[in-house]
Length: 167
Ligand SMILES: Nc1nc2c(ncn2[C@@H]2O[C@H](COP(=O)(O)OP(=O)(O)OP(=O)(O)O)[C@@H](O)[C@H]2O)c(=O)[nH]1
Image (tube, rainbow, N blue to C red; front, top):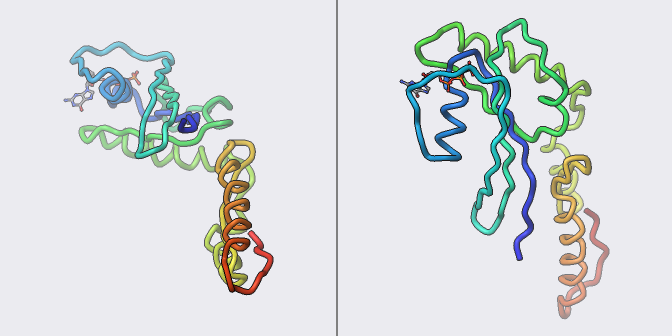
């Protein structure tokens, strides 16, 4: 049975740019010409990508502007964002740039080690590289499955020199 992974995605953008319409079209397969300002709404959908299943929790937000303060619920435990602007509003385009900056500030700690550096180090050892977040339960299963697979691979490799694999 495939593992169903939870993903929380928040839709941000200026007022009346089509955030609700986008979510509604994706989840319900419908479009409405009507406009009803959103306070906050959530949608759930199971998304299958190849062999993987994801429980997508979509958060449709009330429109923001450059002065909006993003609540923690839009930052903590969020796996991804969709930043929406309207092609008929230059201002809405400028707002997503400011939202992008706020999201970066909101995440506090900045990255000091790039994934590519970890990958390079692992490669220099002939080891496998995986970057994970325990908080987001990202790849945590995968890491330990991979270790077991690697141990089995080394044990089963007939006639090859036995060596310890570092990950
Ligand atoms: N022509 C056109 N109209 C759209 C499109 N997407 C949304 N609309 C219309 O734009 C208006 C606003 O759409 P919403 O999806 O409610 O916009 P929103 O960003 O969720 O609005 P807020 O809740 O105020 O933030 C509605 O009248 C929609 O019918 C689109 O792709 N093309």
